[in-house]
Image 1: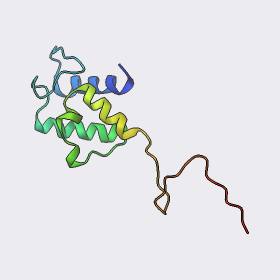
Image 2: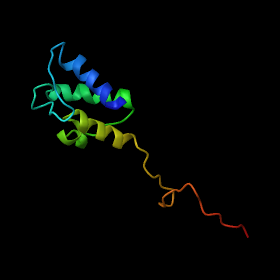
Image 3: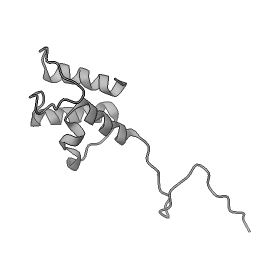
Length: 103
């Protein structure tokens, strides 16, 4: 497991399992296993936002993003990966800009 997965697993165990020895895999559904309910999702989102520096929009609150360790890792990694930035004229910025000679 990577650092994100380890941090998530530790958070889930401490916050939602209250010392219970429930075994789950990185692909197990938190909702189906009864580990996290709808209120727990809000706690999970607060954890993600504060620990990984991301924002979770309302439309992103779906099981595909938040219902298992692996889903969350993919979601967080996608939010943290740099995306191409656009210049003011709408063009994508590049590392090798074109040099235009001055007249």
